[in-house]
Each structure stands twice: as C-alpha cells, then as structure tokens.
Length: 161
Image 1 (cartoon, rainbow, N blue to C red):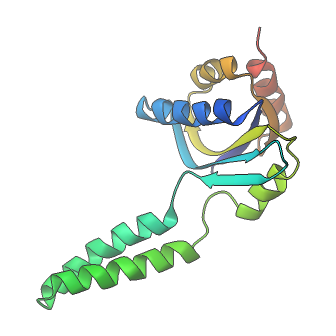
Image 2 (image 1 turned 135 degrees about the horizontal axis):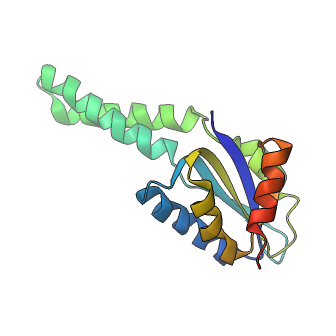
C-alpha cells in the first residue's frame, strides 16, 4: 500500500526542484512513486495544479500499440493504430487513479499566495536517504497518511539544522 505525503514549499521553483529530485531518486531506486502532483498559488491568488503522470498520454500509447497489433491481424495497421490511440486516450482521460484531483485542489486552496505543494503517493522508499536529499529545500509537512509516530519522525527529520 502506498503512503500519501504532501510537502509545502516557499515557492514553485523549490517544489519543481523537488519533483526533479524525485525523478533522480527514482532512477537511483531510492524512491518509488505511484503518482505525484504539483500545486501552487500565484501571488494574485490563482491556483494551478500539474499532474506528473498523464493518463491520457499513457492510454494513447497503449491504445496505439494494441490497435496496431489488431490492425496487423486485419491488414490495416495504420487504421488500427489510429483507432487504438483515440480509444486509449479517451479511456485514459476518463480514468482517475493515484492522487485524488479534488483532494489536490482542496489542499491547494489552503496555500498562501506564492507558496507551493508537492503531493507524492509513495510505494517504496529508502527513508534516510530521501529525507537527507529533501532537507535542503526546507519542506513543511502539510499532510500524510502515515501513522502519527512516523509523521512526527518525518517532520523532525526534515527540519533544517
């Protein structure tokens, strides 16, 4: 089961840097994410949300592959790929897995202007290495699905020295 962790940052740039760091940690096999999102509030109060995993694109790619395979069976691979991609994209757009969009918008609505938050659905992690990598960005823990003890441990570990 994945754990949800929402971290707050002083600005959008720090939050974007943390998402890039998460990709790097993933390549090092120190962090395994199910899903991630970035939310920020501009100085004029507008809320923006960016998902890092596009279900539409993934659905289109998978649909194109399967469409091509079925198209080859019926000697129409290009038509099969086009129909498969369209069907896969539609299915991906209608799917909602990972972090709940309304939850992200709810938390984003509580951000002060200029601040940002990173939402991470964490499958597996090497906690000490990930916490050490995050500490320089000065995150604050906004919300988690961790037990109270583990959340307090995370808050303490992320405090800058």
